[in-house]
Length: 230
Image (tube, rainbow, N blue to C red; front, side):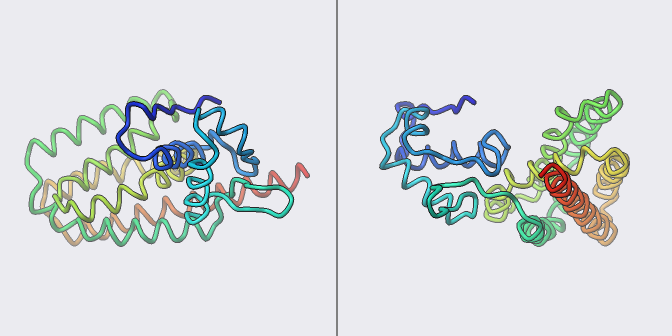
């Protein structure tokens, strides 16, 4: 595992940089659930002292990404069904707030750019290149919501984006959902072009809900596999 950490090139406090680096590594699975974070080991890896590392770990604990376990120390927390439910609920509520402005502000150039991204996604889907497809699918949603110009809402959505990227990657690996999601992406752009807000809102709500269901199914399958392995 190689954690990228360049404090000398950052103006933020070291503890904040350490927090962001560790948070991303945990969410992406680079540091897997159940791993023990040994302070001396991770301080060496990040080339920092243990004090800012402890401060970063305390913040990660507040986020629910790690937990202090008696006689074991700091353990990376596994995502639960409740985590998925809450994060998708947040995403759903916030993204729905941006939809009227997307419909109002979308330009022909926006539509063309979204269709160009969809064409790239279609090619990756045909090649079954899920690893490349997943981040591009999330970029599609980010580009779509950014049309709204609701910057305060967009910043809050961005705060959840790393979690959603991880969950979306789990959902998109399911081939049956992938075809359905692809058709929905194209339909969403069609509805924006048609300025059809009621149908746009209806489809977006369904789209997010189906992603959540697929992610929950993937989590349940992982748990079952772990239980069988034990």
